Length: 82
Image 1 (cartoon, rainbow, N blue to C red):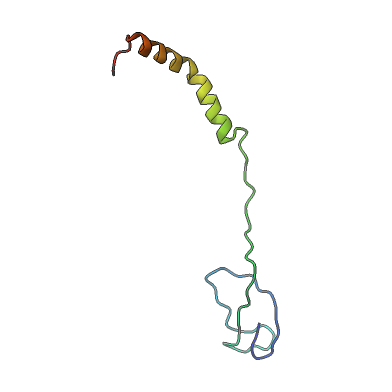
Image 2 (cartoon, rainbow, N blue to C red):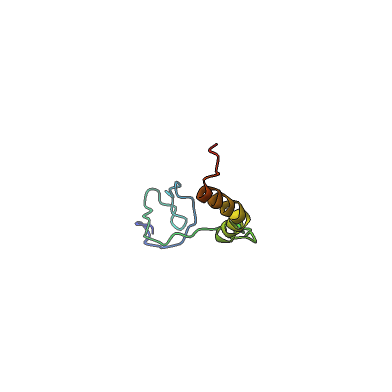
């Protein structure tokens, strides 16, 4: 909003940019920012076929037999420390 001509308009700019000249009346230092809702523009995000939870389940399943063998060795006392 311009405090000189009281015109309100929308300007899209970077967060660190400051608009100092009114585009309607050309006044300098008369611009006042009004509160607004920020918008975020995101690039298209490629979604992987496997989500993190699914990937974790796959690793658990892949290592289930190894874990079973280690448990059995621990119960029998045949497990050799590394």
